[in-house]
Image (cartoon, rainbow over the protein chains, first blue to last red):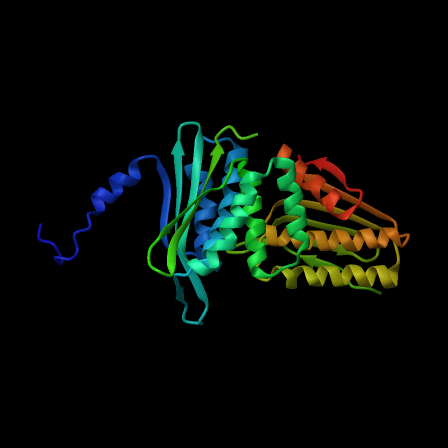
Length: 188
Length: 128
C-alpha cells in the first residue's frame, strides 16, 4: 500500500502490538473532566482480574494523577471558550499480580523541582509519617500547587507503594515527567 | 425560620454529593460522591448554613457522612466542616458525627486522620 506521505511512517499495527503487551488502557491527548469521566467510568471494565478494592484504588489514583496532568502540564490546548486543558499520557498496565498506573506530561524544569522534592519526601516516609504529612499539608490551605501535593500523598497512601518518578529532559527548558504506582490485584 | 438544604447528587463529568440539611431537627447528611468543579464554593454554602444554624437555631446537630468517594480537594472542605462542628461543641453545642466508611483499613485510617486533625469525636461505622 502506498503511504499517504513520505513523512508518515508510523505503523498503527506496530503501535497496537506494543500496546497489546500488558496494557489495558492507554490515552494520549488533552485531559479534562470529560475525558476523566469517560476513562474513570470504564476503569472497572478493564480491571476484571482485580478485586473491588483494587478497582476502587485505581479509580482514586486515576482521579488525582489525571487532575495533575490537566492542571500542571506545560503542554496544553485551549477550548473555544478559552479554557486551558493540559495534555498528557496515561497508561494502565497489568503485570502479574498487580496493576501499574502511569501518567506523564511535559513540565517546565523551573516548576518541577519542588514536585520532585515532594515525591522524595513521600517515598522516604513510613505509612504513619505519611498520614501525618497528609494531615499537615491539608491544613496548609488551598492554593493550586499545594493541592497537587496532597494528591501525590494520597496516591502513595492509596497505592500502598512508593511513587516511581522519572524525569527525562526534552529541551533546555522542559522535561517529560512521569509518575508510576503499583496496585496489588488482591488489595485489602 | 431557617431554610433546609436539599441537593440531589449527580454523577456526570463532575460528581455532586447528595446533601440534606434540616433546620427543624439539626439532622445533616452528605452522601454519594464528591468531585466538584468549584469545590470551595460548593462547600462554602454548606458551611454558611451550619454557621447560621449554630448562631440562630442553637440546637443539636447530628451529622452523617456517607461518602463513597471524595477527592483530595473535597477532603479539605470536609475538614472545614468538622472544624465548625468542633468549635460548636467547644462552645457547648450538642454534636453527633457519624462517618460511614467503606470497610477497609485505608478508609478507616482516613477517618482516624480526620479525628486526629480536628480533635472531634467521630463514630466510625462500616458501610453496608
